Length: 144
Image (cartoon, rainbow, N blue to C red; front, top):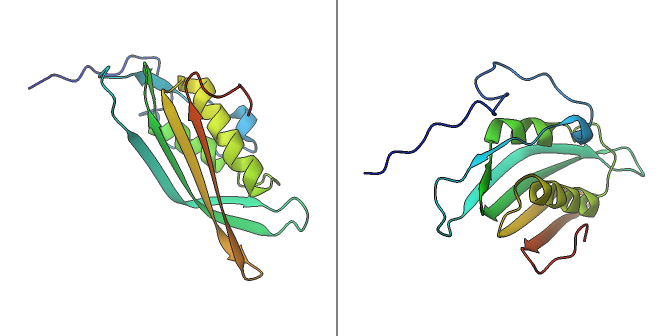
């Protein structure tokens, strides 16, 4: 049986008690740790508690956000990801912008081999929206 190495002390949020809420994802830090394996494997995070606001009406938007990635050298630490996603609560952004921003920030934080972010936004006014954005290392232009 392989021994999984302990994360290094570079993880500042894990084990530090409750995190204070942030008013913007710009203030959040998506921490990472070294991948325990060089083989291809997939990591999936999912939350049904994502909230933001419509930039036109100011009405709250609720979504299930799924982040799926194949690590290269780094993995996302989940507590810092939770704080990052919570920082969207007071942000007025369209669903398309949110999903693409999250994908860009994941790619910037860990440079995965592949990553997909799915935002499944609850219906308002009788219609829901699902936005899916994918990054393939070496295939996507930065910021797209």
